[in-house]
Image 1 (cartoon, protein in one colour):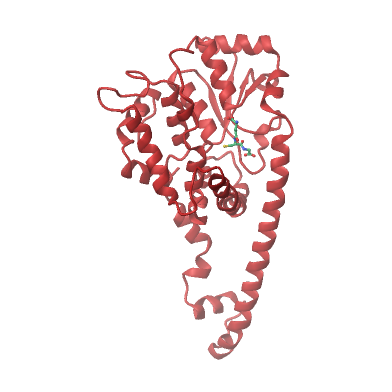
Image 2 (image 1 turned 180 degrees about the horizontal axis):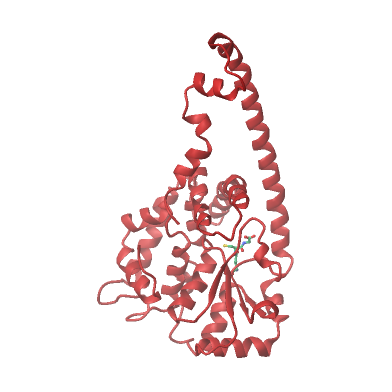
Length: 339
Ligand SMILES: N[C@@H](CCC(=O)N[C@@H](CS)C(=O)NCC(=O)O)C(=O)O
């Protein structure tokens, strides 16, 4: 994902911000109006435009809110535990063992959003252990790629293609894969680090409308997603994410004592990142949390942070915290080329 999103925002709104009132208002008419007439008509047109914009925003906002509520309901319709339990357990264990040995004959698909921190954890795990898989990008608005699954959250693994079995929920996936690989002890994972700031990452990405919009620019890279969905996602999705961050996530974090009303979100996020580096402490001699090799804490934190790669918040973090050397080492360990 690139940092060109502010430019896109500018393009979407350019009729409004960029042009002088006389030129742009005359351009809005069908026939060229004489200057005096055009100037007299200008306030009326401006009024109509303002009303139109307000109505569109209100309809978009209300529509977004209804969709958001319905989505919360759908997401809760079945739990990950129940969904996983309903799968053919023998097929899952065989598939997991074969995948762990990298000998699977079954197709392994990982359904994800690029920007989902939970998906990032699973992706980092699969990449680090070189477990062959196809990443299937789910279009976040309508999630049509998930038609075959009753469970509606991501990440999800599917073994065996169309009629295959599913394994969902990042913790369930990583636990099951670790067990299949006999890795429990190597991958000890202190609770304090597992929960590494997913909410803080989301909060920072959605701290303003422009930032939330940029959070969706990654979608432009996927040709499988129709243009109209991309636009809808930005126009409706970004404001919804911004509202959720400011009106829901932030008050929840204040209530739970994770944040104070007066906290600067960016500084808190950076302090958290530095704490991860300092706690070990990470250095050339101790390159990973796990020592000479990454452990699950390394993979979790790396995975969560990959969900914002390419966003301004990621660049700012690399430049203004101590994480950058470790990030380079993790890129190399997971086979990702740093850009
Ligand atoms: N406990 C789950 C949480 C997964 C989750 O909340 N994923 C988000 C994306 S980051 C999701 O799918 N939200 C529902 C949606 O997009 O409708 C896990 O660890 O996998």
